[in-house]
Picture 1 (cartoon, rainbow, N blue to C red):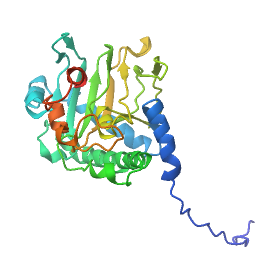
Picture 2: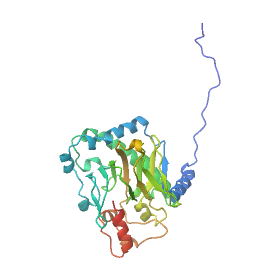
Picture 3: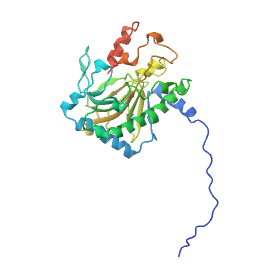
Picture 4: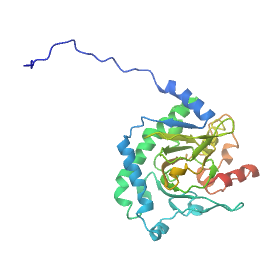
Length: 309
């Protein structure tokens, strides 16, 4: 009969946690990755696989459980407000010069989910959506912004202070896309994409060739946009990327994405080379409406018009 008394042994005393700042080691890696490729992967972000799967369950509700009539009620008036809030229907006209129609349908929600009403089917899920958006903002975005600030030799909270939670410009959205090809950069500071298995996302590598972005279960794909270029005076470039047709065995499926688009409510540039005087710098609201101030070149104006969407 085995003994009920456990044998004695020396007690384990855990060592103290390190007092070194891990960010000092991380920010050079982030800096080099963003300046070389423009994209980074992030894992160990605090959400379990089950939590991630639940968020994708919820992401389908605005598309599958809301009638076309109710969608029209919550469609964004982009020209009026300067950004998407609510639905953007597929095949909106995005380039009047070339008559290009996009293939993205999305439902965008401000981080403060109480700022605007939502479709009936979405309302029961608002507490979970709120938890998810706050997690993205405080536990993912802010640590990334602190690393970027350190890479610019700025105080750690400099960019965090420009990305406060209570404003209208930053959105958390559910996106559904067709298989059409599209090439662009985004007029945001940071994009946080929750990785999903449908292939198609590619980035332009430094050698000018397109490279596939690999899916990582419960991973994040993070990239910089046009606004980060403005904030850093060109130090961090916008990432040119595109979405092409997925592999043939995936083309019968919708590409459903969960994305956080992050901008900054500021006209201050922090970088080494300003593109215009601070007093002439447009706010992100004006940028969203293509209401650029006097002194911006026609080339830049045209680029902004083409990349606004």
